[in-house]
Structures are given as C-alpha cells and as structure tokens.
Image 1 (cartoon, rainbow, N blue to C red):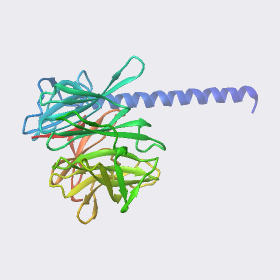
Image 2 (cartoon, rainbow, N blue to C red):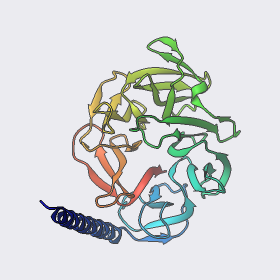
Image 3 (cartoon, helix red, strand yellow):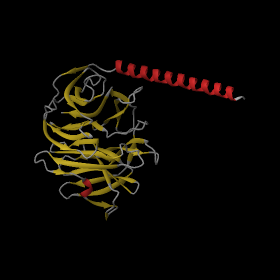
Image 4 (cartoon, one colour):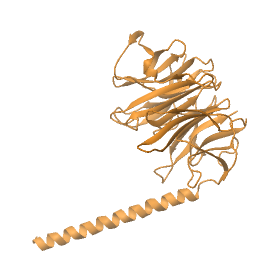
Length: 337
C-alpha cells in the first residue's frame, strides 16, 4: 500500500471513529434526558423530621432542587416530593435530629462540613470535615451522630484510600474526631497497626454500643464498639457498611464477592450465630443500607441511563423475593417517625 493510500485509510478511520463517538454521545444524552423526564415532580416546601409517616432522602431529580433533603409519604414513595432548602452529599436522621454532610466551593478548595440540624432542618452546630463526605448516621435517640469522609481516594474499591470517622454527642457537642484513637481487640487480642481505617457507623439504642467496619492488613471486619470504654472488638470478616436492624439482632452489610474488585453483594448477618444470608439483590451495591422495618431493606443503585443519579431500591432481608424500585432519583434514605 502506498503512503497516500495509508493516509487515506487513516483519515477514513479517524472520521469513522469520530462519527461513532458522536452517536454514542447523542444516545447517552437521549437516555439522560429520558431519565430526567421520568423523574417525579418536586415542589419547594417545608420538610420536617418530626412527621411520623414519611420517608426522607436526597432528591436526585434534575432541576433546582437537586441534592436537597426531600420527603414523601411512606406509603407513596414514588409520588411527588417536597424539597427543602438544605442540600447535602449525605444525609441521615433519627428522633428529630439530622446530620447533613455538605460540600461547597471554597476559596482554595471544597468546604466540607457536617451540619447537625433540628427537626425543621435548622443548623444547630457545624463541624469542618477532613475530606470528602462518604457515610452518615444518627443514633436512634438522636443523641449521637457519626460521619465518615475520604481523606485520600474517593472510592472503597480504590487501590488506596484513607478514611476518617467521627462521632459527636449532640447534647454536649463533645466530638470524638477519629475512631482510630480507640483501642482495638482483634481475634481476642489487643491490636495496633498504622494502616487502620474505620467507616460506616451504625448505632444501638443504648447510646453506647455501635457497629462499624474496620479495615487493616487487606481485610475488612465487622466491629462492635463502646463509646464509654473507647474500645472496639472484631466480630466477623468481610463486612462493610453495616446497618443494625430495628430489633438489633442482625446487621445488613455489603460483602466483597471478588477480591480486588469493586463488587459487593448485600447480605444480612445474624449477630447471635454469625450466620450470613445473601439477599436477592445480585447487583453490586456500594451503599450503607437502611432498614425500613425488621423485614425490609432500602439502598441506592445507579439509575439506568444516568452516570450521576441513583434510584432507591428495596429487597426483603431474609433472602427471599426480588428487588423493586422504592423511589426514583433519590439517595441517602431515612425513615421518619
């Protein structure tokens, strides 16, 4: 083949690849637009954490209320929603107390903060965050709030990441800035290591006991901790982002199903027997699930056709049934009442 023919073939190949890329972009845009048109209606209004029949979450629908704390009636989660003025990257609430992990542009970098809010979403206290918002929880009494941020890396599937997990007493504003300061009992023995990370706190009703994930030496563990003793103890391996059931007998969690890959399967662990049950959701779930009741879990998954929106799904907690959509264009769910 002559040089001129090779140049012609190369030019045609470049044009063809450009055309294919343009078609892909147009198709993706069409899918995104279709997703936006299917979003529920969103109206500005008053959102209160004190209602007893609702579900709150972060609104993911396109428009001016994107990222706002929104609420719907628990019995009609796919209906039109009411959006507040409060926007967050992560949100959770219990007993009329909420925690909002907020991120806004700053003079030199993102201004990341944890806002503790009352039942009317008014800020009671603000704490600077050491990194990118990741997980948030409030104790059933509302007396404690916890949050996790990425200090390095922005994914639990990354080759390297570092987290910081903090807990605050919402009555005294006493802050425990880093769970890594707690003593660790691993496999029945005191344990120390420079690579320890904690994330995904979930609280018991006694205002002392909590569960979370501990990562060290390439393994993850479910830990049970005591705020008063400033101590944590490992219970089981390969447990991430635990969520304690309302009856406090089980934790839902994501279990890594392929080492070295960002693939997780939702499971439920019986705390008395340590027997685990895989759930009917077989897609990879990178979320800290919510117990809607003692039998049902809710969690976020990427919305079909969208790269920056999630839908809320629900599945039975005993491994039966099948996943179904709970609320489209939403994340960070929390029960009200």
